[in-house]
Image 1 (cartoon, rainbow, N blue to C red):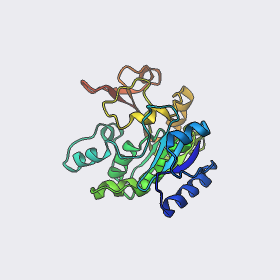
Image 2 (cartoon, rainbow, N blue to C red; image 1 turned 90 degrees about the horizontal axis):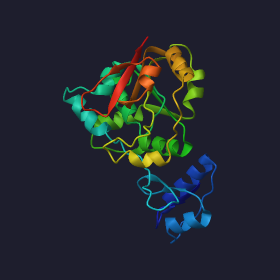
Image 3 (tube, rainbow, N blue to C red; image 1 turned 180 degrees about the vertical axis):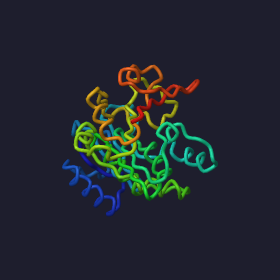
Length: 258
């Protein structure tokens, strides 16, 4: 992996690229007039491109979509909540103002953003992302993305994210230190109708949810352990989740009440 910039980068973009390369401890390669494909083929590596508006992860293999941060479904979900409509994740987790929420599988952070909106400034939202390059992009996006929707901007900035393995994070957490512990493991099936999340599949960590992980989650959670998964997933039954079935939905939520 190396860092480069968009074409015709100005000084600010170059300085940002140098900062990110230093923080991630990976090389910075000057872009110049060369194409990304040329640089990746020459280096035989993937790259993180710093642009004027966003960061992008690019695979050296051709025909792979770049990964970049965007709020995905969070924007229209917040609008629905503001209209008084329900959100399945909020209902499954029983989220209320002032609660604490640990998202073990942050991804694009859509669910954490929604949780942040509900929990508000008095609450606590912590998210874990295993891949350090995804983590860097999500951290920058949560901090710098600007939406016309003020409530979305405020919710994003309250999400506190860390890069690392959720197994270690759970082991290091105190008993009953979070009201809700949440898992949204990357589905092996490409079942989502949203193309927005598909590029992350090239980079995501597919860490299994073992009985040891669930035991740690039950220790750390004060009220609930919640899992979102494919409606046919055997993990619901294996780990004792009460399934909240959603007619015609491709995924369900499972809850362990504590």
